[in-house]
Image (tube, rainbow, N blue to C red; front, side, top):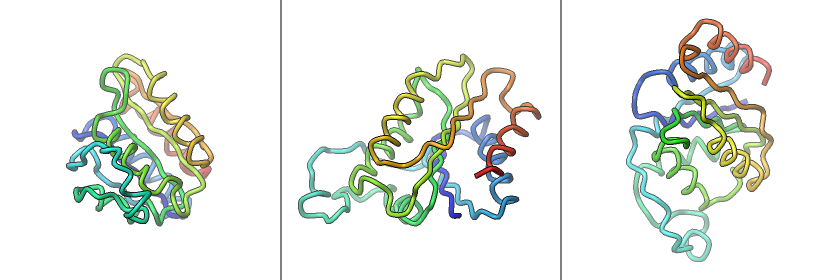
Length: 169
């Protein structure tokens, strides 16, 4: 299975450790994993111009770093969204990518998704609700949500849990 991980973190901290544990577990299970560093990309917000659905044949009129994400997003069997929580939500960079893949709606091949979130406070409700709404809208199966709060971030136990989760996919 091909897995695309959209890393919404602009820093190499707790979310990166979660992604690495997930990647290791998935690769040990025989899956191919590509990590896309969305948090370091320049992705504009959706303009709601509907070009993608009228003249663009599923392509966005904006030309930015979303073009670096789309090949993996279209070719993956599973999409994993990963982000630290900033003010109760995923990063603005991941939010922009989430909104901009609207141009194609459901990923071409992906039938599964997962969510990895790190936080200092443990306030995940809004981010999880957004993820559930997204997976429901595009019709892909939610395989699970992994969270790491405070001292759990980078802990051996939490990273082992995430690695084990990835092996089950």
